[in-house]
Length: 272
Image (cartoon, rainbow, N blue to C red; front, side):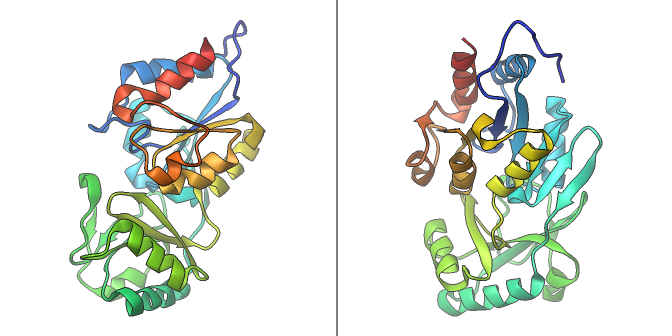
């Protein structure tokens, strides 16, 4: 963290950024320009909060690389993580009985699904069943015994279908099981089942309260439908040029892509 610059003031006290497709470039890194823009905004009084669909074990290395010491919202809002203290402040788990019923209802409509699941905790593994393709080469544990899926607390379940598009699968899941679980699309091949009512906005609002901030103080950046609640919550929402059409349609503005320093471009303009 850097000292606040008393001679400047950033117009938003909270900057919320998604990671994949937003803060991170296609190669998984944050550009020097974006790092500098975030540093300047935090010196001018803003708090930067990472808000990601990734659970803590898939997020920590990114935060460490950034030298990030503050609060991060992980797991689509399920986890609030203190990076400096390396501990979970809050964690919401999925009711496994409801999740089992939800999966049965979805499969009754779509046919068999390929499954993965994220276990709760700082070191919670992502279990991956047969046929499920992990996006981005992140570490996962093969699931060979289906009963293991339900043997420990979970934050989320990932579903894939061999023929349905992500949008069609998410719609089928909402239609058949939306009264039991929340359903979100957070990336190509990533449809998730979450605790009902959970979203990035719920996790971010909780984190903002811890920082003494409100939605009116927030500027949010994202690229996928799972970012819609976050952008709707914030005073100003920015979609990346590479964003899903659903998110672009609700954003207050569209910046350049994650590979073209879209976050930095907005921060630099507002700092001007």
